Length: 185
Image 1: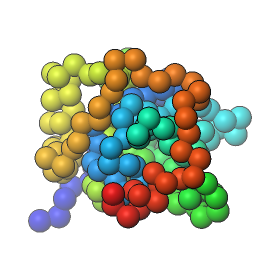
Image 2: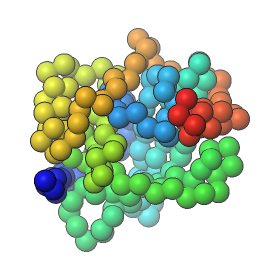
Image 3: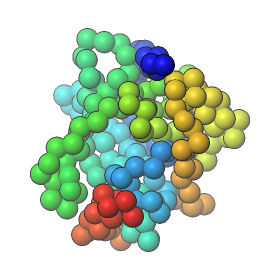
Image 4: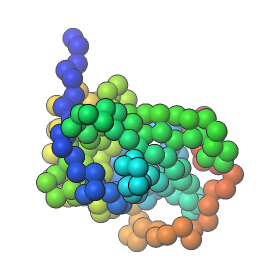
């Protein structure tokens, strides 16, 4: 049986969407370390209307990050279907990697969101705060199920009581986290 076309948010206000989002849960990905904590994304609007993306996670006390850009997949559409482009590996960014970033749900106050993509291999639950009310989390799980996701694959992302701020933590300057994640470690 073919899966139905996913419903995405229409009329996403990109300006309101900008800022920091904490990863509450996600499908494990080869692009993130398995032991990552305090994972977050920070979005800022570029002068040309694209979005600067900064994804950060901490592993073994060190900050790993990757930067990229997002843009509307179809500039004429009001659907929240974006493309995100990163250059890898992070320590020598030469290979472009582009993926889909579809906003499947966002609350009216832009405080939590459900992000997916058409193959349903990736799913993220994001929040403006490092913790999300369990009732809201369960509502987002139901929405993901309605869109054809197997939510049993979701992994909750650990967050410390005081998440790191700024870029003053030790960095994984060698990109070891990225190499390990490609190898599935």
